[in-house]
Structures are given as structure tokens and as C-alpha cells.
Amino acid sequence: MSNWGKSSHMPSSLFNELRLEGQFCDAVIKVEDVSFAIHRVILCKCSPYFMALFTHTPHPDKKVFDIPGLSPEVMQLIIEFAYTGSVSVTWENVQELLLAASQFNIMGVVQTCCDFLGEQLCPENCIGIFQFTGIYFVTELQHKAYRYIIDHFEKVVFSEEFLQLSVQQLTDILGRNDLNVRKESIAFEAVLRWIAHVPEERKAHIAVLLSKVRLALMSMDYFRINVMSNELVKNNMKCRPMVREAIATMCHLKTNRRSHLCNHLVHPRLPNAVLLAIGGWSSNNSTNFIEAYDVCADSWIKVANHLEHPRAYHGTAFLNGSVYCVGGFDGVEHFNSVRRFDLRTHTWHEVASMNHRRCYVSVTVLDGCIYAMGGFDGHARLCTAERYRPETNQWSLIAPMQEHRSDASSTTLHNKVYVCGGFNGTECLQTAECYSPETNQWTTIALMNYQRSGIGIIAYADHVYAVGGFDGSIRLCNVEAYNPQNNTWREVSPMSTPRSNFGIEVLDDKLFVVGGFSGFTTSYNVECYDVTTDEWTDACDMEISRSALSCCVLSNLPNRAEYIVPRDVQSLDDVSLES
Image 1 (cartoon, helix red, strand yellow):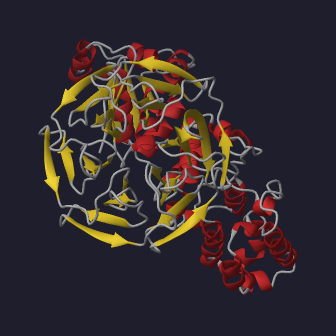
Image 2: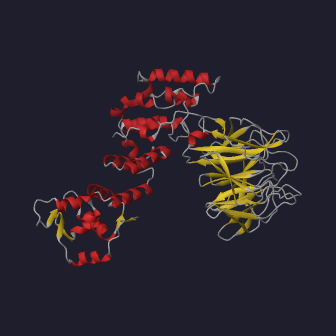
Image 3: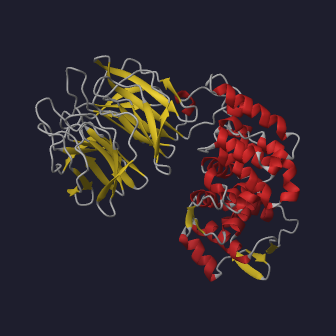
């Protein structure tokens, strides 16, 4: 793999031809036993180092210049860049080339090397790149590598490079609010793995490292079995008060869940993503209410909405850093309008309207486009479908679905759009179909086990999950998963609460269902499903009860703090970069 860098001045190929032919060369660069005939003016234009080398020599007639500390192969790449404006960066040469380019102050090559390394970041190499760039003061790449470590910590822990972190570096990482760990047990087990690499030397660090683990965020069972019984913890005098305080805090939290948000032992880390619940039907009216769910704090907060018009039975999509609300109904009008929510300013902006009015619409995102399918236009159930491209701000019709569907739901998996269930004006549907953008065709897939209108479907763990809904008689709590490999549905554990017309999303590797209608009343209730245990558990209730809402998950928000429970956020600049 290689990366090609371009210089800003792009010297003429004529000079390179003259160099290769040895014409008009006025100096020789010598590296080890290899000589390179060059034109001084070309290298001076490329590098302040060579300008100083050629103009400050005490011997004006000197023609041969020895360059120590690098290989002839890298020197050739530097010279070729000076003449051609291009350089080929590979894994084999990037480290030495970056050092040479830094030494010669050739920023075009430095940037190309940094871009190459930044594109190749992975759990196995990010720590090495972080440490390497720290030594040679490549600040932008160093921060990018550190950010990668924080965001992918659960995988980085199992790399060989993780074991080479210094105690100060690991302490800093574990202490960060934004360390991306789904469970605090992962942070504790990372400490044990790091110590086990050189146990006699590192076991003395258990107390300082344990102090950075949010012990009271663990379950009591895990804490007793894995922390309290651990020999390193039991045998260290400084760990004992931490264990006692953690137990006391966990006991207190059973009666007062939020009183310890400022206590380090239970201070939630920052979530990597946030779930938004937008609009819906509440208290016999449509609402414009927006709440954001902070999964690490298990809490909802109200999001400022600046009097946006209420909307229910709509769809939402998170795309290119903005939230789009598509179609819907306000109790009077069926919308074809689409509104874009600016997450930075908390303001709404009108974008292009759909070709059809769509209430009870199915909305999903695939390859940078928003898809809107089916729905009800105030007169009929629709089979039409359309696609929005944000770069052109235009909707265009795609092939119609094989069924007329309102109150269906949609998701994307393996580059296909799936639509399941719904209502055709006569009956609740058991059918499902998928769309291929490559062929612009819909294909019927296996029937679900149940008729489901007001259904929620979502791609999760390489399956399409069909959740809840209304079968024509009752609201459902049952759940089934579709395997596209064998075109079959299988039932999994049911929800605790039957519901239709709810929000559904995947957050923190769990499937969340939000609000909905039980058959008697709208709901505040939120629960989540873990595919690894096949179990549903309750999450924090929303502030208002509502059905016909829509949810989306926001990731990589620069202003994430505005959508989560307030914390003292530690900036990257505060982190020690000591080795």
C-alpha cells in the first residue's frame, strides 16, 4: 500500500530529465557509498535544510556533501520529490522517510507520511504510531492516534502494543471521561492484562491504576467475584479503602441513583454516541419535544427545540452531522416537507420536499442517501419510494415497493434496504421485501411469523430484527430476527412491554425500543435487548409519554456535551503525553 504526495510548486519534468542525464548538475549528495548528482537550486527551493547547507558552507567551491543518518533509498525519494513533486509512501519506508523529511523540513513529505499513517490506524498499530510521533513532535498525527486509542480502547487492549504503554500513559487513558468502554469491567481487566505482562515490575502500580477505574459502575456481583477476590487488590493496602468506598457507593446508589454523578467512583464516562427521540403523539396531540438519551448515565435530557412545528408518524435520519425529519402528521396536515436539524445551533432548516405526502412513513439511510418509503398521503396507502441526495438537495423516485404499506418500518443491512410489515388499508401485513440500489429492484423475502403494523425493524448483529407492532387484534411484545443468509425468521426473547409505533435504534451494541402505544395509553418506557444474552432490560424512562415518535443515533458530535448529562469534560490538551 502506498500514498502519493504532491509538492506545491510542481517542478518541471525537464529538470528531472537533466538530473537523470547528469546535465548541468552542480553538486553531489553522498549517502553511505551512493552518490546523487543534483542541481542545488532545486533542492534549495524544496528544503530550508539544503538552502542552509549549500549557502553556509565555508568552502564555496565544495561540490560533494555527505548526509549522515539515512539510507540511500530514502535520500533518493527525497530528491525525487524535490524534482517531481511526488513521493511514494509505504509501510517499509514511512518511518525513515518521515524522520528524514522532518530533518530536512520538507513539509509536503511530512504531511504525506502523516496522512498515510493516519489512514492506516488500527488497534494493532495506533499505540506505536502515537509513541513514534510523540518522539518526533508530529502533533496532529499524535493527537489523531491518541484519539483512536480512546475511541477503540476495547480492541486496543488486546494488541501487543498495549502492553508497551508506560504506567503514566495507561493512567492517563483510564482517567479520561471519554474513554470508550461499554462496561467498566473492561477498564479493570485492561489493568490486569497490562500488569500480567511484567508482573513483578508492574504489580506495585495496581493502586494508582485502580484509582482511575470507576469501580461503583460495576455490578455488585462482578465487583465481588472479580475485584474484591483479586490477589493484587487484596494484597495492596492502598486498594482496600477504594474497595470499601466502592461498596458503600454502590449500596447508596440503590436508593439515590443520581446523587453521586460527581463522585469519581461512579462518575459516568462520556458516551460515544447519543440517542435522540423526536416528536410523536402525546396527550392527544402531536409534539415537537426532543429528548437525548445518555447511555453511560442512563438518563434523558431535554434538547432545546426553538418552537419547531409538532410532528408525529414521521421518520428521522442522521446524515452528515445533521438530523432530518421526514414527512409525518400534525393532526391536520399530512406532510411531504423535510426539515434538517442543525445539531450545533439547535435550529431547523427547510430542505427539498418529497414528491409525495407521507405520514406513517418508513425512513432509513444507505450510502449517504435518505430513503423514504410508503406511508399514507391522507387518501391512500402508498407503495412509492424515493431517495434524497443531500449534495444536490433533491428527491428522486425509485422503483415502487411490491406492496402498499403505511405503518411499516425500514432498515439497511449489507447494502440493501429492508421494509417489513405495515398496513395496506385493509389488513396488517406479514410480508417483507428488500431493495437493491444497484438493480433498482425490490425482492420479496420470507414472511415474518406475525402480522405487524406499527412495527419497529432495525439491523443488529448481522440480522434484521422485527419488534412489536399491532397484529390487528393486540399490541405485540414478541420479537423475531431475519437471517439474510438463509432467508428465515426466528423468534428471540420478547420485550417486557407490548407496544406499537415506537422508536427503535441500536446504541452501545444493544437494541433500544423507546415509548410507543400499549393499546391503552402512550408510554414513557424504554427497554434494551442484548443479543449476547438474549435478554431485555429496562432503561431510564423518557420525561414524557409518547407514541409515533422517531429515533436516531448521533455519533462523532463535536458538541457532544450539549446532548448529555453535564460533566466536567477533560480536553485532549490536558492529557500527559509522557513516555
